[in-house]
Length: 427
Image (cartoon, rainbow, N blue to C red; front, top):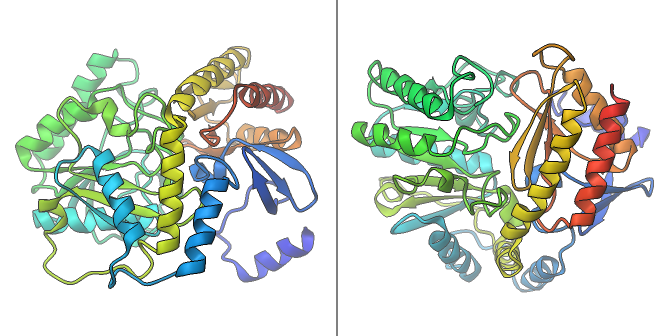
């Protein structure tokens, strides 16, 4: 492994992060398990950053990819593409957006970039409202609406971004308020901000912040925001790159926890729909999607092979009620993790929904983030045969847990046991 690591470092940017003191090379996977180049097996509780949504090497997906690749791999959007239309029809229906149009990209970053293009063109404004502690991608435009210092490598921006409070329930100036008071205060903050702006194009928000450490507001916050946004003509972009496809258990989309005033104007998705294949996309009502007055195509978005994978993956997810499984097994897992957290002075909070769970670590006896402990737990979990992630806007001190949505009860119990040992080992 040292040889491959040295080669990696010789040709890759210094900022291209790797997990672990001894980085892993994953060579194959099956179900909820992966294997490294030394033959070690791991229970996968991170799924390639929430991307292996159903299972590793899912036969239905690998068969669809193989069969489509044997016919034609690529054509671009300049030609009619049956798998792309098939998947677009299903996504449009599932989105909940009336008269929906769908544009496919190759990543969540590109999807959010496209959403920003649509919103600014439609509204004739380069102002964007974004949430503090947010993450929306690594392109020049999406970095400029990311409210997380650890993932914002430049202060230069093509957009004027104004940051709104409300996505982090347990920290900040309103943390001690009740949920209704919290929502009221955040709405007042938004009203005040709009009173000092020049007509923003849109609010972009993750219903549950991913890289930010799986933080979320009380249900209904974005519905309350929507009343204010509508009065000012501001669009709502729901970034569902991590929350989509039923991962939260309670809802198919994260925005549905805030549905009182209807669906978003624009919805972005990626990650899990491809189960590892490069699929992203944007759904918007026709009036917004069709506002561009110049030609545009996608060379690789909507590739026949990735669309075939997405169709097979989505069909499997729906046919096997993986949303229901995420709710049931995720509920059990978060219960086990909260019990573990109650016994550890280093655990500030265990939060999440379905199979999207965060464990925030602090220095015992304080409210200070503890990134060293998060790194130590990550290593100890690996030693115990479990892969997890980490993140969080407060110095990367949140353990991120998001296994494939087909996780079994036995695997949830196994992973919780390993995490319990890892938390103890890390002090």
